[in-house]
Length: 332
Image 1 (cartoon, rainbow, N blue to C red):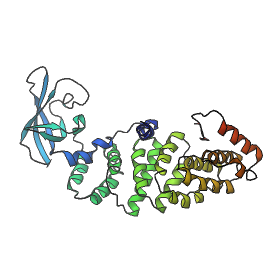
Image 2: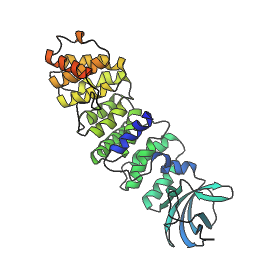
Image 3: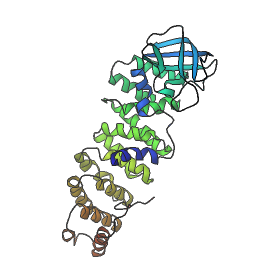
Image 4: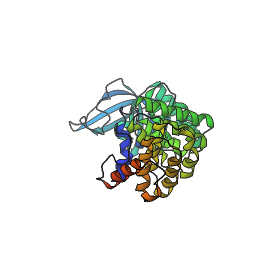
């Protein structure tokens, strides 16, 4: 249960909802799993009974699979969750992702398999259907991050996070990191998917771009999202890259302590000792001492390395009643 909550929390904390699909029903997933992808126009409703809603369509363009020049779709009547046809009226121009179940066709993913036939969406779907491997799909998706149609750009971010392998050029990596920064600035929930993509691309260049986004993040919720991504990086990568981004800046050092507090004890302890040796901020010293005490470090080994009042306060807080705030120096 804790794992599920930790995965859901970054999305819930961002201020604005994503307009794109979630990862389970992206356009990429629809392209891969649909038996038929077709642009079609609603001709008429021909409900067989009050319990059923039936729409007839004219095929305008087949993007994938085979289907007749006209076809019908049937679903239970009513405007309920998961139903996709009730909002359509005669003349609607639709992009449909359909799956075969026996002799009949049904929209893939319920309502998410029935889209307005926007030119940008159709062009993007054509490209995805033509891609033959993950490398080609990744290239298409990175390009789509800059698409002026939010439906395409946001869906591309979610789709990138679902690819089993990522091989991106330096330019494409820069695009992903820049898009992540813009998503954080806007409070767009695609930041969660983009952060996942960035840590999967882990190298020195990517870490050097991601760490400042985290260390300078003023909002605690968005910093938490980035922190949950960074802790998935190799500890050695953080050991090598984190110190050079601190520059004696108190706010950056506090963010760094928050990050180290989320690492496994054996990885966090040496980095916390390293921070204690270079920081001049009593506030940072306090948080580092709390962090070291939490890893099992004896208070006696810290005496003389920080002012006595700082260590005494760290011990008092460490031995006091635990709160949700715990080691978090920020409470915004």
